[in-house]
Image (cartoon, rainbow, N blue to C red; front, side, top):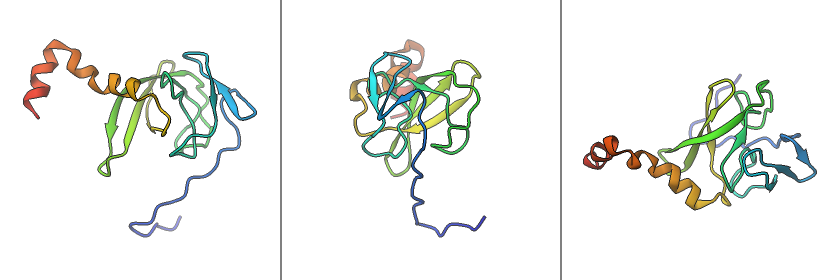
Length: 133
């Protein structure tokens, strides 16, 4: 495979099928709300914008839908790329795999902040975390 030139973004491929999709929506396995497949800021809607729950459908490439597990993935944490983009760390409750997924523009900001500050709610970690700031 040819190497990409530095600084050039690779466009995201559009996915052909979703997980449990019915037309242009899918039903969330966490909160059972209908979620639109179109997501601002990303070409691959892979989690619920309300509760941030996902299904384990992608294997290695976002949108490939090749994972055989199909297990429920809980939002475990968030991380931030060097360019400031937030990623949700999901944990598959069936196969124990971790994956990082880009946040979408319509994700629940309160739910994102709750998992971002979760480490600070642990009394043992709170002091150490604040001292590193």
